[in-house]
Image 1 (cartoon, rainbow, N blue to C red):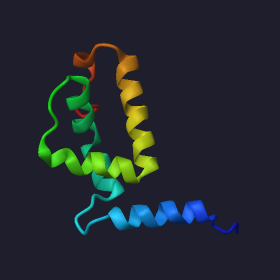
Image 2 (cartoon, rainbow, N blue to C red):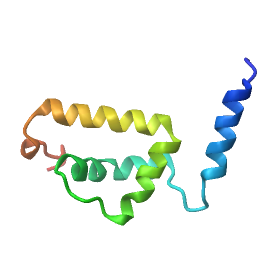
Image 3 (cartoon, rainbow, N blue to C red):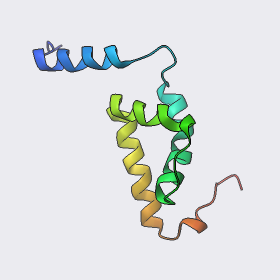
Length: 88
């Protein structure tokens, strides 16, 4: 196993220092991601309840990557109105 570099350790400690007890988990972030994307794509103001999602993206590269992939998939589909839940 490769040892962490000083810069990697500094970034990790910085991310840990920014966390708060009620931070979102990745699972909870993932559940809110589509609502966050809808607000962005439709030009709506994001409710304050989604602030934690934005913060989570800044601290979690995996979720940020998934969010970008979601946006690209929605944009590739074209008409946002025709995107429906598979459960609908």
